[in-house]
Length: 379
Image 1: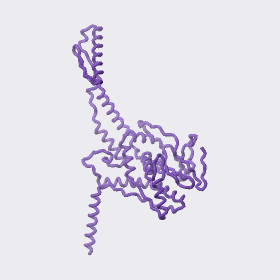
Image 2: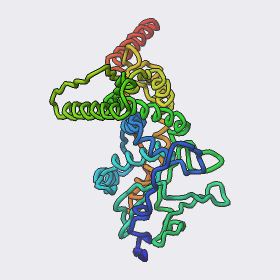
Image 3: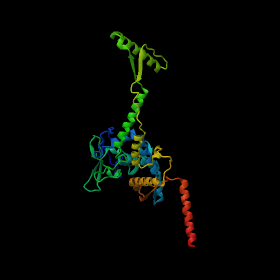
Image 4: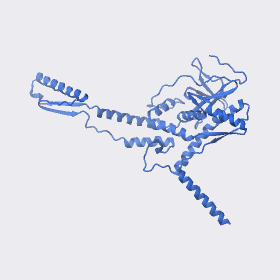
């Protein structure tokens, strides 16, 4: 399919990121990061361990939203309307929906990509794409970077309209430009945790689906034919008794002689998994930076966040905001520039409030009283 160049805008009206193959899930066992191939492991970890999936969702929601301030009142009104109603694809609308998907990809894969969709010289939509289907090429200059994607023939080619793409990385390393995921360092522990969960399921399946061992003693006194006939009769009656019990019918098992019935594997106890599971979850939760009780893990007697915890989490959220702010600013500036308006904007993020409102009000009261005492002392 040929891409037509729009007159006036000089850019394409089609999306460059809404296509391509979907990576299959990879196995976490034997995991080795190979320059960006670990994204399949991270996706599988989110589906297999609900705590990690909840952590990403909590971080996205705690980042909150923002407002954009323009110097021109007309530009302010038109930009607010666009940010509120702009299509983002997948049935989503508004800058908040785009920011949620963008942050989700950034936390999961360490990088996120978006696209400005322009038609008729106007910015019509902003959508996010599958960053795992792209490759990054670094140029001779340290600031040059080109995104590659699959064309209609399935070959990797540089995307034709690089200036319409949004690309953000989290904690990029000098070795490669792909960024670092929040899940980095977790696959080894996640593999152990899934083994424990799988073993728990197998043990409880064994406990709920009991196998019996029926032993008839005294068969050595009989001839082989009689012993075989006796064993066949006992087995038949035991099978009928078990079959009737499945249908809710109580049936007694009557046998002649010394018959001993045991549960196969009944002597093997189910291991206590509370301590190892908690140790692994502590490591995983510590990597997210969230207090455990926000993820439903009540490990302490109190469920309140201390001032130090709130300050640390607030710093993490502000660092995440600073990472995505250039992409949000580019969206606003591109819209205003194509509308012929002053594109100087300022991003104002919503306040992060993680402390108890009563404690904050009490602290403000103490500060006001201290200022009053110092003012009276100077007089």
